[in-house]
Length: 439
Image 1 (cartoon, rainbow, N blue to C red):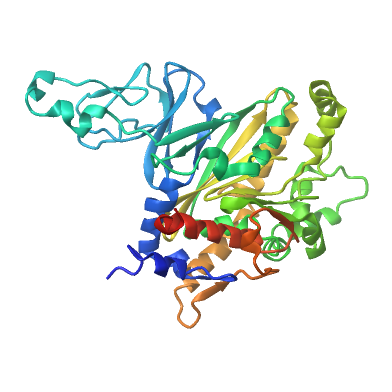
Image 2: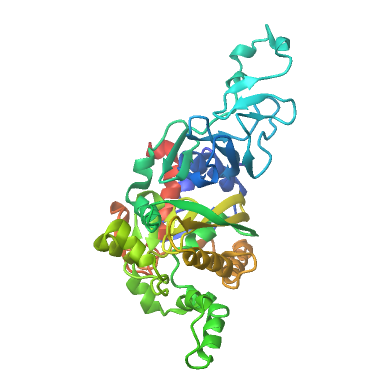
């Protein structure tokens, strides 16, 4: 018997002002509804335009569990198509990326489609005469995302044909993307350094929650970052500080540091840590970079760009962006208890190569399948995923520094150890999971 399908009241009851029910993380039916409601009606990150620079270039990925292909069309626009042949349902683009030329060709029966999804040709077309083919669904070609928006080369789509606009969905949160792009003297980014992928045996929301959880680093990462700092402290006086130590050490900052750095929340589940300070604020300067930025923007503007050192920005539902270190992580839902994590790095076009080297080192040390820090988090996620099935306690507490009526103020800056951003995400989760109630 269904607990949640067609039962908006039951879904709303899962989120209280300072608590969420454990079913959000372990229930298979809720996961299916997330794919049907949340990941269809929200704006989801697809990829970066630099991944498809030429007409015919394509990149395959998923939106929720929906297979899609991002492709550069002949008119230079970026399109997002559902990666499914309307004939027998085969994935049309089978590889991770490539160039398809002027059209896609299904590998099963050789139906072909323009790079905007329109049906181009099919073998033995006469066999479809007088069959009603001209009026059937297959005649329309590959399905397309309901809406696509490219913002400073970051490609987002909304699968639903109608719904909230891109601008209304993201609002002021786009300032994080602006800052990351503006860190390039030329105002451009390129995907570089490859992608790191590994599977987590946990619910996707655990990873999203963790991005603005500032009360765990000095605890969970003591065994990794703490050890690195301890080893460094034994180094002979005058030893040059390695880049890796610069990146490890801030994870061991005390609670007071995280309290003071602040958290900003925006409507629709977006928010970021690191309002006034962050773990990325004290990296060594890269020779020549400041001079390039001043030449490009002027001293005041360059200072404003480089002085904005946001830590983790969550773009709800499932990406996190680190502007100062030029990384982006995607939390791809696979099942209620399985999430594929992708960690991407970007080159600041026109900036010194040392910045990309630092970005790639950070990604390897923190986010890779072989990382030392990321596995601290992974162990916590997997312990939680297993233990949430235990009886006796059904609710998860997210009440730290909760304030009365905070839902009435969707944009705010608060104490850096507040769990307000988590509560913000759960309020957005309810809205998108019960659209008929909030229309």
